[in-house]
Length: 225
Ligand SMILES: [Mg+2]
Image (cartoon, protein in one colour):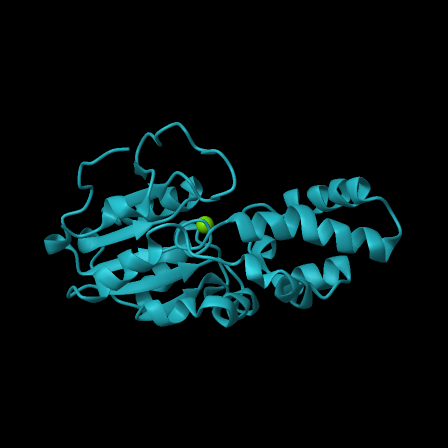
């Protein structure tokens, strides 16, 4: 683990956090999409769980990087399953990543605005809030659905900056998705941080350091000194 301090918080006014895989353990989402949903889909459609998983994988892959990929209403229509109800069924698996709460609390003590900027649908956000009240840990939460574009699209940041004004040179953005970091980079956000362990139940999926961004093994590396 690196012990260098990647952020000098004296030079920061704003911190933007992704939610899933950044503050919250991606285990919940992976378990939901790769286990719980295929099991329920198989029951409903009368096929095997493996077949359900294959069918779902194709459908999900076809929407990668688009807003539909993150859109609960799209998946309810497409799969004809009440995804929201299913998400609540396994909500006991929703949890913070290690050090997330202590980091958010430490940032709240600084003259720094903290926001969540997520591709998650507001209905998914509601599930997470019901479980651990994630919204209460930050000053505000913005969902990319409200802007009609996912964070992967550089235009998203133009629209977002019209709604929420911030100085990109004095902003930290933390996100486990490299395409999203690239679009934030293009917009000009200075400090780009990539968590390398989004799912606590999997061995580090991202061993390799990202080329252009600061990879962190743990959120503890962002703690103010
Ligand atoms: Mg994420």
